[in-house]
Length: 330
Image (cartoon, rainbow, N blue to C red; front, side, top):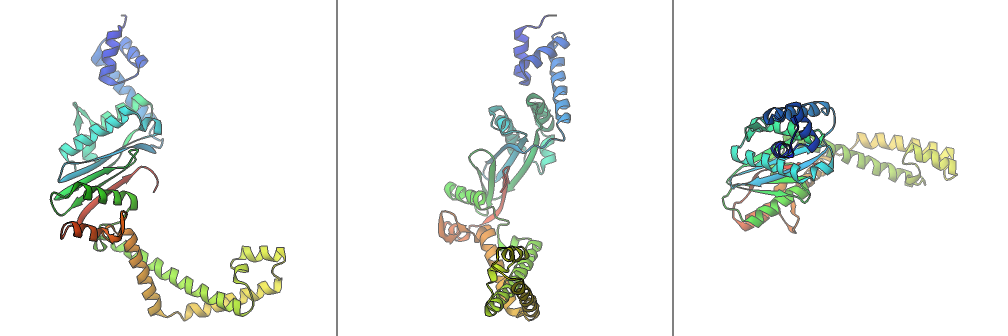
C-alpha cells in the first residue's frame, strides 16, 4: 500500500527518526504505525550494537538543584556536532529531570527509570539509532545536603554540584563555590577527607623530590668547586653533545662523571632526616592548599580561603560534599 505523508509525519513525531527511515518502516509494515515504531527501535539497537566498540568522547553534561538534592547527568556521543544538537541537549535534560524526580542511587538505577513508558537505557539506544553514533550515559553524580547548588560551565561540557551544612545558602555564594570546584578541581572537601592513600603518595613524592634536590645541589656545588660548569654535564646527552661541540673535553667529562657519582653517593648517605621530613611536610601542606576545597584560595579573592569566605558569610558554614563531571580533559 502507498504510504502517505501524514503517516510519515506522525511516525517522525513519535520517533524523531529520519524521513526515509520512517517511509521504509511504514512500507515494510503496510502502514502499521506501532509495528513501524518497533522496527525503528530495533534499527536503533542494531546501530548501537554496531557502534559499541567506538569511543564516545563528546557529549553534554547538565546539572540541577532543588534545594536539598542536586545531580549531574552526562550523555556521551562520538562527535561535537551531535553533542551541540538541540535534540541531544534536550534528551540529556529529560534524563536529568527524571534523576531529580526519582533520585536514583547510581547510574544503573538511573538507566532503569522510564520516560514515557520507555527505560532510559532503551531511550539512549533509540537516540543512537537516530544519529548513527554511539551514545551512553557517561556520568551520573548526586549530592544530598541541607542546601545544594549546581553549575554548568559554558558549552555543557563541565558541571559541578555542591552541598552545604546549612539551609538557605545565598545563591551567589553557592554559585561562587560551584565555580571554584569547576575551575580548581579539588580532590577533597577538607584535609580530613583526603584519602590516606593520597596523603601517603604525596608525602612519599615530597620526600623523594626533596632528597633529589639536596643531592643535586651538592653535586652542582662540587662541580663548580672543580671549575666545571654544571649545566654542561647535567645529563649524558648534554655531555656527549658538548664534547662534540668542543665545549667539553673527554677528560673533563670523565672528571665530571666521577665527581657527580662520588658526591651524590656521599650526600644521599648523609641526608639529615629531620630536615627532609620538615621540607616534605611543607610540600604536603602546599598540596592541601592547592587541592583541598576548603583550603584553596578563593578564585575571586586570593586574600581568603574558601573556608574563610564561607565562615565570614555565615558562621560555621562549610561544604559537606561536591561532585564534578568534566567531558573535556583537565
